[in-house]
Image (cartoon, rainbow, N blue to C red; front, side):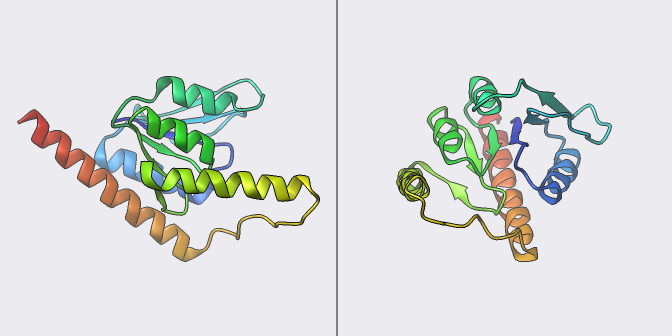
Length: 156
């Protein structure tokens, strides 16, 4: 299982959690961004810098994600595409996106986009709280352990 991170907007504290998890569980972690990223020295962790441009990092992840991989993103369209490829998807706040929940999230995103286009101030997401960090770490741990157990059972 590869872990893919839409790293341009991923909070540093979430990246730190991912670095530790990748090392502890010996899972490859790839951060994709349109800027240079500093990562801890590890053969399991790599950063990929893609050219600047709309959805370039998203496209890179979607092209390479495989069924059973994990994608970390707050980007709803990227989450939808990753789910269509059979990847597991988790937001940096610990919300698991599923085939059942993503259409509602896409609809909400489109509605908010229309409001912003009409000049309505919608505000941005709240700052990442300590509870959000714990929720992410807990959801990540549960998701990875379940996926790795299922993979081990499938090989037996």
